[in-house]
Every structure is written in C-alpha cells, then in structure tokens.
Length: 306
Length: 322
Image (cartoon, rainbow over all chains, first blue to last red; front, side, top):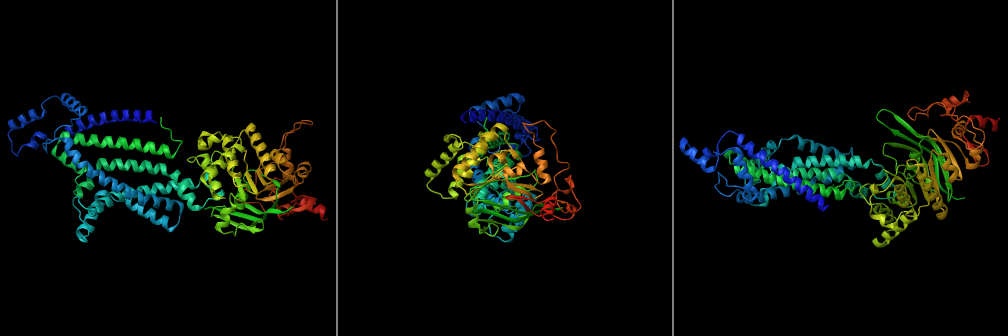
C-alpha cells in the first residue's frame, strides 16, 4: 500500500509537469499581452516594450519556462500581473471558498442521490423508480449555465428568497450548491440505480435471501457495497472537477473561489496566475483520484493496488 | 416416516415479454425427515425452479400454482417473518456455481456469520468462534475467515457454501448441482463431505443433479424429472436396476459401464422439450421410441408399478389396468 502511494505520487509529479508545460504554452498562444493589460489605455509602444522587459516577456519562451518551473520547484509561483501580488497568496485566499463550496455540494449531493439511487434500483419499475429517473433525466439534460441563470432568476430575482451574490451566510450556499449538486446528484442516482439493478440479479444475492436475510439488509448492506465502487469513482471525478472548474457557477453567483479567479485571470492574461490555478487544480485532481482508488480497493478486494 | 417437505402439484410459469415459459408442470414430491432424495433431469427440466419455489424465492414474474408444505405449513402463504426463519434456518440451499454464489466484497467469515446472526444470534465473539468451527468442519483452516471469496479456489468456495448452509443446522438441505462447476477429483471430495455431514446430523437432503452417479452414491430415493414434472420415482436401487420410463431407460443407457461387454452408448434422440412450447400429451412423446397414439394426446399420471416405484407412462398404466 505504502509503495503504491509513493509510486502514484511519483506519477502525479509527471502529470503536473505536463500540466505546467501545457498551461504555460496554451495561455501564451492566446492573443493579448499582459504588458498591455497592466498599462493604462493608450500607453506608448515604448512603455509597452519597457513593461515586457520588466516582466521578462522579451526573453525566448524556453528561458521563460525554465525560470517559471525553477521558481515553482522552489515554492515560488510567481507574481500576478493583474493583482501585483504573490500568486500563492491570492490562491490561498480563494481556495478555501472553492473547497467549502465543493465540500458542501458533494456531501449534499451524495446524501441525497446515493439513497435515491439505491431505492430506485431496488424498486425497479415502481413509482419511486420512475420519478428518480425523471429527476435524473432533467438533471443531466440541463446545461449548468441555464440552471444557474434559472436559479438566479427564480429564487433571487423573482421570489427574492435567496441571495445570489457572494459568500457570508448559510443562505449564500443554497443556490450555488443546488446548481452544482443537481446534475451531480442526477448522475449518482442513475449510476447507483443501475449498479443496484445489476447486483440484485447476481446469484450471491439470491443466496443471501436463501440464508434468511431481510430484504432491507440485503439491499443496504450486501448489495449496496457492490454498487458502491462506480459511485465512489464518479463522486471522486466530480469532486475533482468542482475544485478545478466551477467557473460558471462561481462567476454567476460571484463566488470568490478559484474558478472565478481563473476566469478573471484568463481575461487579464495574468500568465502566472492562470498557470498556478491550473497546476493547483491538477494536483487536487490527482490526489483525489488516488484517494478514490484507495477507497475502492478497500471496498472491493478484487481491486488490486499495484 | 414423517414427511418434512411436501410439494403438491407445483406449477411455475415464467412470463417473459414474448412468451410464457412453463418451467414446472404439476410436480408432486415428498421428502421425509432424514431422507435423502435425488432429483435428476437434464438442464432446463425445472430443477432449480423447484428448489427456489421451496424457499418461496421465485422472482415476481413467476406465476405459481399448487402448494409446497413444510412441516404441514404452506410455504407460499407464510408471512415474511416465518419465511425469514424458514430460509437458511429450516431449509438451507447450496448453489450450483460456487464462483458466483458468494458475494465477492464480503469475507467468507461474514458470509457464514450472517447466517448465524439471522438464526439464533449471540455475541459477536461466539458467532466468530462458531463460524471458525464450521469452516474447520468443511476442511478449511479457521484463519481464512477473514479472506475474500476471490482468494479461494472453486472447490474451496463450495466448501464455504456448505459451511454457510450448515451454520444453522437446517432440517433440509437443498443442494442444487453442488458439484457441476467443479472438476472430478474435487467433486468426489465435496460429495464425500456432504455424505458424511448428512449422516452425522440426520438432516434431509434434496440432491438436485443431472449426474446419476451422485444419486446412487448419496440418495435413498430418486425422482426423475422431465419438462417440469416427475416421470419416474422410487428407491434408487429399484429405479436404476429396473428403469421403466423410456426416458429413464435412455438416461441410464447413456452412461458408460466399466464391467460387462462393451456396447455402444445410446443417446436419447431429439432435444429436451421446449418449456415455451410443450408438446401435448406426454411431454416426452416426440422423443420416445415406443410412442403410441394415446401418448400424443393424453398426459399420463404417476402410477405405482411395484412397491415404492412409480412411473408416469401409458405403457405401464395399460399393463396394470387392462
């Protein structure tokens, strides 16, 4: 187990290296220039060139990359051109907001969707199943952009029940969490249902009934554990995706997290900040995947960590 | 002897989207306390369906008729609580394929312990202790309780299945082709084990198989099944020495013999009756060499030919009732 974790972390470093290369070159392929963005409108050509020299943008790309990556290895993520402060500091300020939003979303989504999927799967063909599938179909068909705007319009503007901007209170969580959690819950419910349906057809479930085990226990203990592996995998992937890119939701609800930050910094051509946000998200994604694999190997002994 | 399980005119029809599958058709059978009965038949004869019906475990899509009485009480009309006691407690079952009959994500210990907890209970330590004993009874060391099914071979898993079935000291053990999925040497070990355990605990055994050798090893009585009904029933020695139904004669003729002059094995022509489209009259008539006009329209009933030997065939009922 320990050796496996070390090995996986080694692989993660390789992935992060690739991410650093891609993010570095991709953002530089975008039209626009941070030097221009930093100067007031109508700045002279000379001023721009001077700024480029100050930012090191006049040097060849590989030199710039080398400087960047050696900085990262030393723990220096660079300086934001838009905020004129340390990138690490900005991210450290924003990351807790995204993590909090993600955590609440994932916990709420799982608490709601996992039981729903299990009940639907073990009562296939009943009304509960029908409404679960309807719920899932809607959740998976709605674009998050539309869902976010719909939530703002209905609950924020029309009914005026909930705040649609920023953080601060529990009420602030409701709309962004609902917007993020609904499509996620739809997917979890669906995969939980199909996992239960498959499992309940297995011989070992008939064998469990033949041992005189109650239906409730069969469903929630003996079949549930079998249906859990795909659920955990899905939850892991979605958690990673939430940390990396709740751009739409954070932007619509003015949630000061790193999704919104990424959106702003791309607009500002804030190279150092874009690169670092992507790197941090990728690192989270990799670690979550590792955790998912470890959890799954604990659930299902047939999954071998090697 | 006192009757333990009595199946009366059992009929099971599975409804699929396109058609009806007549899996069991008017099957009657009795098992006495301590008796071991063999149920033989080809694949698709309705053997497993009969076994699951005895535990009231047929899927909802199955339409049942007739009745099954356990100690005089209808299994079909039992309440949920009584059924939970019956399943695993009174009647235990060993499944055909040990590779799929154990839950892969629970330890074998848990799969034995769940029976103990459901029937009797007790403290966790006692349950664990008892599960270890059971595992040792079937020849697996106790420390393997914490291993998962995937860490065992097929034969070992079937032993675990037997240990779990025996956990609550059931009065009837239904073994649904317990050795079919295993290779021959392992088969012998498992059968030896079952024979020993049955004799020791005086439980009844319903051995479902298509292997006639197993029946002669283990059982006192044999019921031959064809197209969801019993076509011949009697003491093993009588039926095997003097088979009456052309199907039974065919089954025995298809077995190679070690002694006596070598002769060609005879195969029964044709295929087993299609349960979605059963022939009228005697279900065996399309394959029967001695088929008569009557067989094509009239279904024969089970009739006693000699003491403890019954057959369902027009050839013999005529002889008895001229």
